[in-house]
Image (cartoon, rainbow, N blue to C red):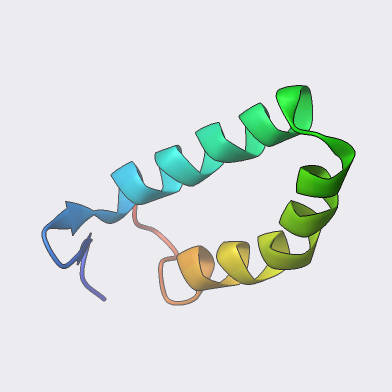
Length: 55
């Protein structure tokens, strides 16, 4: 599996998603947090499927 998604490094994309997750949990409104919870499971799956061992 590639370490890149297009021109972006997978580790950079994962770091950006983690930063978004932290911001939503600490500063997001209740509605934003609920919406994030619905998509978070899919975002995590996309960034972990086939990415084992890539750091």
